[in-house]
Length: 504
Image (tube, rainbow, N blue to C red; front, side, top):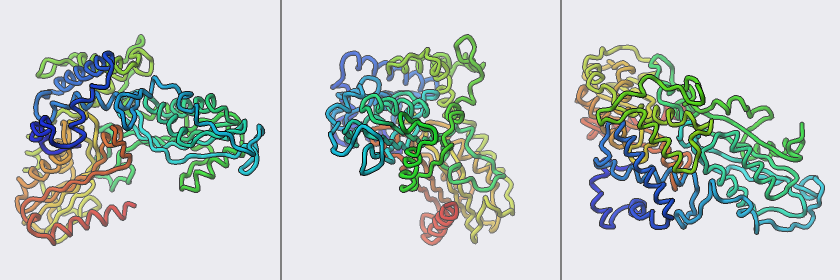
């Protein structure tokens, strides 16, 4: 996510004037060891190859710092950072759980060796709604996590509650899948604080790949979950007295979650769904001799001379630089998956699609896809998925388009506008520019008035230092009569609000 033209601020930032985050980025290598600096540079070099493979110029304004930002995001997301001291505390793969827990175990009178209930020996303790993110090992895209941890103390000691969150954060700062993450958190807590039992429940969300997003122009409005584009999975792990079959303590754990409207029932967690939850696996054909079968396009050369094989080799280099083993069976196909995701960002045939808009047949049908209010034609909830050019992370959401047409009651087919949205989304983008380009394209045909609103979730808001899980960004562009007619603009915006309210 970023400004329309980041390059116009480059000179100010280099002179120490501008956004604090970008100023800090210039010197983030200063606290790193030689090996860490070498790994960071290797990731940056690999990202430049990926940009070239996409037909982009890594030196163009808006992309010059992208290799640096991507390297920083990967390192933060797989190693962890101290909030106040970037690159000084190494978590993730290197910090031991016992180093976190030691010094945070406190004696508590009344807790005996046995197991009972609150007020007696071994009362259940639950920390709910720990918001985390991790990087999917199958496709290298971040996914968001809501983590709930419970434990039954023993040995007359309790642990500082913040340490439960810290331990969960350590294991999330690795390439992960949901079930393994739950198992590792549970095992680490059980082995380090020696409780009578541990329970971990994770609610995880993974973005769909663009081709899986709902785009059927003949369908009714997609559900709110479909519009957001997330795939959800629930997983759990338990140990000790909480692992016992039909344990009443496990029921207590679920009941304490329900007090905060976290509704998980026995049997909700599903190992099979967790094992196949990443949408990148639909791109996977088969494993042959320990290697992922590639598509015939792998040898194709981009206009910059970079082959798909070179792009995948760059992703392998990134994995190695993060301290991972690219030959680990779970990572064998990851370079292929990640490159396939990036290739969705290549520009589609925009001229052809705009030509389709100019020749589109209008229709008189007014159904769930259209709202015709006087002369305002409204097409709502067009799903899209694009790629942030500053971080190479996806942002996705819905586009709402309103336009004024001389032929009152005439509506352009939804599928035509979907094609226009897709054309501008299928490239490295920022949301502000995407909104403006869609508005300008529609205005070139309906030059009386156009208004475009884009609502989107940005994964860079989840996975970078800010970690604002659940945040949403809205942008608006108005042209023609909508820029001067406040009533028309307000009427269209109210139409969106009413629709969102009806969708819950």
